[in-house]
Image 1 (cartoon, one colour):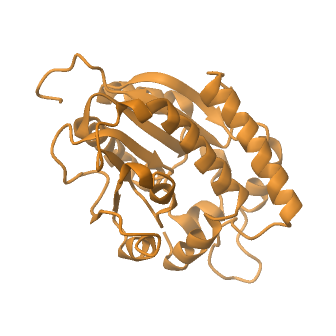
Image 2 (cartoon, helix red, strand yellow):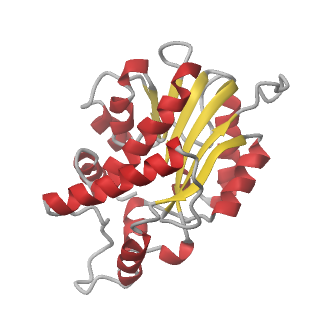
Image 3 (cartoon, one colour):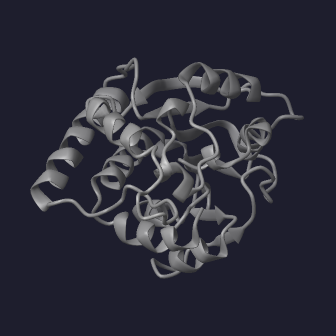
Length: 257
């Protein structure tokens, strides 16, 4: 991820419709998992970026992990969260350390050959019965300069993510594409932005501010869709992202626990 994009992310997480929708989805999913959390420090944000998800879950004293020192320095501005600088592919925690793990648009930035190991690590650090809240960007055909700017290596399809979760040992509670209602417009924007910038400059993300009313409408649409997926269990057939709420089975052997 380009260093300048961390500052953009830090500000955008407070108001941009994309992040408002993503964090609304997180909070609704976490509400389903809250009863699993046995105490403070039992929730992990594996790839916390600039820390807004930690801020939203601060009542359970979550632990943040990120490979970027820049991201962690910005996260510290949000509060005194326990933070670890490490890769999501080699989590420096004991088995069964957490009751809930969060991975929001992180594993798409990992080389595909290392992604299975990242899912196995998330499975390992969860206690039996624990939950993974996952979001991943979808459809490689939409790969654009936004993805290059924020460090995305690969966009995924639902079948790939299902296989990766199953191979790691997870069972699915909720699984769906998301950002479906806004998909046609957003997809056209992404396809248009596949072209190099005419000014010859490097890639930039799509996180430019929008007029307030437009931003609010888009965030409201995403919140409505989150209700459909998370609260009512609807599985949508396509979208800009893939969302999963997956569980580590309770009856698990000691080796994978």
